[in-house]
Image (cartoon, rainbow, N blue to C red; front, side, top):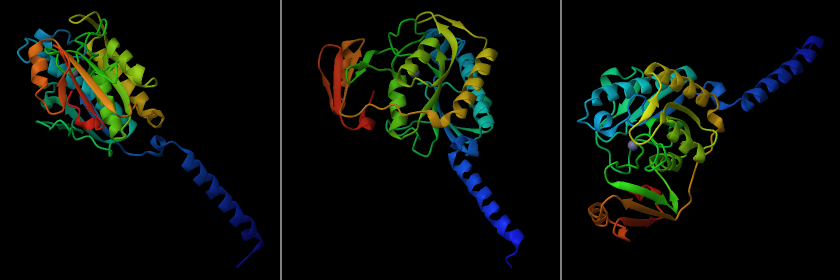
Length: 293
Ligand SMILES: [Zn+2]
């Protein structure tokens, strides 16, 4: 029945509904309580309290077990930040060669990718909403970089991609970007934080130590480091829709300079690699995933 009251009420309801829908569509995804799926890549050398290769990060180091505990707690701080920010699934990859996580102490809501993965598959794909680094170090020879190295601290001197120096940070950000997953946060020493800001200016970081060279750093207390990580992660989640993908377009030319000729000779035996000098090998491709750093 059309009454005078309905004639006023129905258009008013339609107007209210339209305003609500318009507002909802313009609200950033994160604020619509979208459940986020997060990938955490971890390394040992960028953790507060880990400052030398021999004593802290090599598996025969006297503080190696302590280093693993420190990393695990830094990871847990990031997990807490993500859970408070609305993450529903958090996957962690232990990226340190000899292992950097003590799974006994990992946060109950996180899962850990473990075991040997092929070079092409680290369990990362386009289903993830964000990629972050915990415990990351700067590229080899970065001034003041604590434990700075690129993939192999023992054999690799420098790596260039298309004429530009690149380390693990650049290579792994590109890897995540390949799957259209934005990198939104990094913790490590101040040098690693600055390195990633060159690629992603609005990235959130937590500098948990100040690098004073390869085997020295001014470290925050572990408690303060974890606080900084948790807060940084929460800031990153709040602006998750604002990150752009850092990409380098193909073709790719990689040059690796080794510390000794034997390593260059070995690399030259890998498919597609060519030795171009005593210490350097090169690899050219259009397929980013085929690069074996
Ligand atoms: Zn590393």
